[in-house]
Length: 255
Image (cartoon, rainbow, N blue to C red; front, side):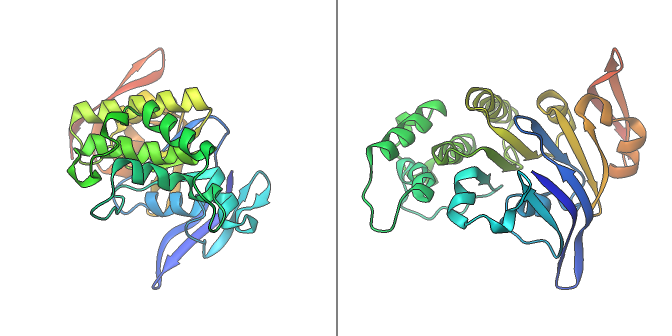
């Protein structure tokens, strides 16, 4: 997947400007940057949920806009930061939504759908919650359910918009370990917007750094972060601990 000179404007306001980026098959790509940098918008454009004002996104050399919605939904999964789920939906209901791209109009529930839903709930550890309303779950449990829905969708690329926002440290670690394990097990390509630079260092292969809608840096996670970049992009003084030249931990000192 590749973005070429992508720009995005809404109501006269530029959110992305001239973004060039690529996603390598099988990688874990982190998108970082301060609030308002354009992380969510870039992910929505890459996932085909928003059309760029200028530029284009290619999927295996083919313009993403040429993919029918159903085909795109089979290839690309997107888990938003705060998915809107109404009252009354159980865990099974939500996970089953991941099968919609595979079902024809008026077609009944198939054995393949049942197997995919069961496997997704088992893989994410929510099978025991299948009859519970989603609104009754903890934040960490809900994130597992939304990941299960994406897994039932059987995508090739999974976009995650701040999946650990508003979770305590235990659930952050739980969700990130789950995503990393699912990626390895199912061959997913994962693109994740994330605020915490230390988690990004631990889990991501590469980091794409956004600042005011432009790409400030992009490269291997352990090499792209340095004190100057953090000061420029985030406005924070820091100390980057290194091991053999590789960044392993960021300590924030002052603003």
